[in-house]
Image (cartoon, rainbow, N blue to C red; front, side):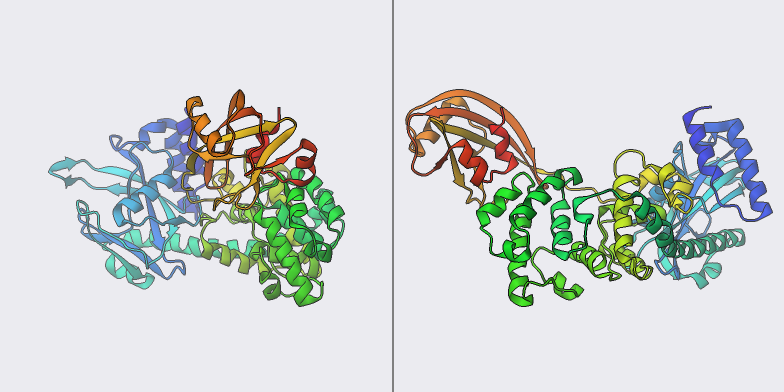
Length: 537
């Protein structure tokens, strides 16, 4: 049996079939799939698959219908799969082609209606199409009636949103109304099931967390300063990398007051290698605000916490729930992934409205007295079991029995993300200038990434060896011996630097640079990784 046939059987076997008649229909189609396999994907076969969808508004009160010229009636968008074995993808393609909608969200990957529909002989584009049978797979999608739609002129004459109550009047095919209502009923049932799943999360996750939580330095207490510091450090950074930084930071700045009164150079040196240095600067700004406005005591309300520099909804939620037992979700990538999979939600995790709805739903199920454990259980599950890369560890998951994505085999299709814009690429030429045992560094004044930090001298573009002398002369270095060159790339969030680095031994110290020994650099001067990597032999 081919992989394509296996895929067809997998999709069809999961199709919803609630009544004996539907189960019998499903069994017949499955038997034919086992016998005929891939042939059923092509309209040359006298029975073949079509993929269609009932597209509803988010409240499920309106439905999008198209007027098919061939059948002279309003119906759902859909069509032949023409070789495509991914029926969900084919249904999405058909909806977009026939309606012009770009943002269309499946409510589930599961086929909600599987039907054998006889098609009589007909004339199409001047040719006679013999009678045949459609194996119709029907899905339920959601989209916004506010989005523009357009008609596929060669096949349809109208596209419109109508109240669900108008479907029967507009459709000239009574047998299709039965299917539409079946799918709509399934969509409403699914919506209720998705909402009900939220209520089950605490009872499954809190006991699991207490048994399986990793021992991490910032989990030893619920001191707001410690939780706050750890959450800021963990943004864009791996847990293992943060452990040492967290402990060293607290040795130097053990209290909010110590951080507020600390030296910025010391602060940045402690942050060296973590990247995103504004996180550290904002920590100190927030510490000073706490010292000034709250007498050094961390504020307790979400409004006050959100007003602190560098603190967004995620960090405020984490502090509120972990430190103050408030029902304030901390929605990060881990939580978005876990909940998207549990509810099999195809709403993009980049959609602010979807995130707000998830926050509201989670807030309503926070268990009194266990808010901190519940927040951390969601984080922990996403970090260790329902992982972002590779196969999730479903066999170890305490939610496997209730997870809709696991039930339907769509774990690795979720969460849905918008495609990121490609990173901007820049070329730079970097100089490691040494005079005896002293290294040239300077404060970065260029706006943008790494602004205000120490850096190795560098210029935009890629310079050839013959162009280096002019640059050194502008810096006041007339004698220097080129020792070697290396090339490295460094990736920021939105930019990739392609860097060529030249190593020079100089005879004089240019006044515009700060010249430091290796010991001084390690003790006092924080160099970002983009430059520090050239000093590692």
